[in-house]
Image (cartoon, rainbow, N blue to C red):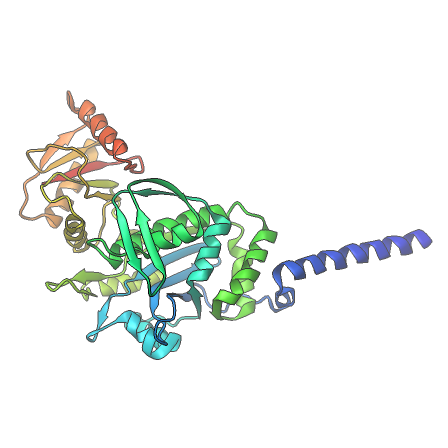
Length: 392
């Protein structure tokens, strides 16, 4: 009897100690008792990253829509360009004028989304994540230099491979002084986000809870805590992340505007969380072999492929030392040649392509030489690849 009493006391002590430890680690243990499954699936979340306070105004520097299927453990993310023009005003100005409620209402009306929650994050939070989940390997392909003393932003990267943490990682995703401006910055944000997510999968639950405690002072949660705990508990078991491109176009003035033709497909994609219509079923690497080696090439090609509602797996706009006399499609499998021809005809109706197959004599060598040139320029496409499309 005495032994049983001692065992009970020890068990209780261990349990209380464990609970106390978790309480100290996360600071919100009691909120687990509010654990509540959301009534909707998918769960729609508006995520806004804000910059520093300047002259009493704080702008939305990052606007992201996350659709979370907590039953299938799948997340679909879409970045809204902060420079998107709506009624002669940029979308990030809506946040400056009307706060998160105004931005939420504007996007809800535009996209037919009833947001279930919202999260406001500042740069201190991202810096903290970069320190805790870094380092992240980043390939810088061109010089990146910018100074803004008002925002205390100092960016200076030369081409090369970096292992980045907090401050450096934050500077990398904030840079927007290249030809594509905010649009290329969105691509960098996707790249960094995916790498941070992969790193987060490998940390312990205790560390994740500790990180969340530290993040809360830099995060404004407009979401039910019980639902957040439920989503966290489901997603920590493993999940997939996919990105959907926002339906934008660039007008003659260089402004980022809404692409009305692609908007209905985009709405349906978010609603159904099916991303196939936004990506090409063929794995295509598009390579620049023309005279213009600037990001203007990337801008033009992105717009052309957007009209076909697809995008190549990779667009190589840099000079990688290719000398092609003709627009060429290097096809790996002859069985897809009709699909490739039809697709290229829809994207480039005025071009005439030369179609070359890897199994032809001498072509396999050209294929490997092409891959070698890319790797020497620190460009590593994901394999397998169905076709290399070289445009002049």
